[in-house]
Image (cartoon, rainbow, N blue to C red; front, side):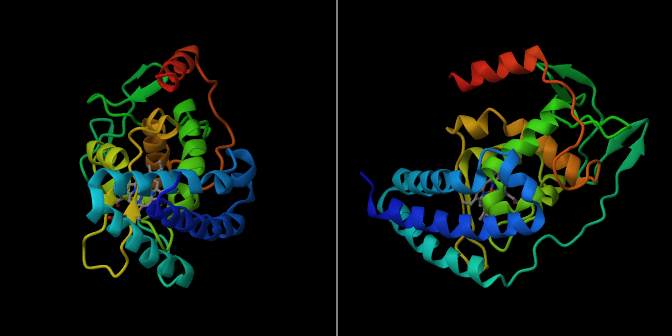
Length: 250
Ligand code: HEC
């Protein structure tokens, strides 16, 4: 049933899950219980992603995925890179709008299907003065910790294996973010590790919540919300639930 390369990928997934689980315990016991058992679930998407990448690109791809597995396990175990250095984010106020240095407008403009968007139709978090988060931001917190934190670290803070997404979303734009999550990414740069970001475009547990994960990362990356599970969240609206059901049943 499994090919040699997907077994390698599974082994990589397990290695990562072990490392990230340890990280998660240090940082936040809450994540493990509140989200859908991320440590236990994690090997599946990791294996599926790497395996799928290998299958898609044929023989050479399979070789790359397999060697990626070997190379990637090393830095994760060695822990030689410091995760997530703190970056100060300057949000400028222009005509009552909150603008990020990359030009992203963070100002919630309208609500559709229970999610908030800026005037350009890009999803944004909506955080009340008392810290209450909109439901999509809360949903993003949960989905992030179920699907992404095994590699990217708790709270989007980064790990020895994968970058701090709370910072990435301040730099790359929404469409680049979507593209990377849908299609994956493989580091071909000068780094020593051959790291693999799996493709999630066909995984409904990620793809139906890709905007939620984005707004959650924006909210935490801009320090609108602190680390950890948002204490106070808006109710899940009927429109949100309907949209979720129809996406998950596609
Ligand atoms: C199996 C490990 C793994 C999982 C799971 C994973 N990623 Fe990644 N991701 C990576 C690696 C490794 C990179 C860096 C790839 C590179 O630089 O080529 C990356 C890069 C990214 C980037 C680009 C970041 C930047 O600064 O350029 C985004 C965006 C991203 N991942 C989003 C996600 C999201 C959202 C999830 C959860 C749905 C997720 N990833 C789950 C390993 C993973």
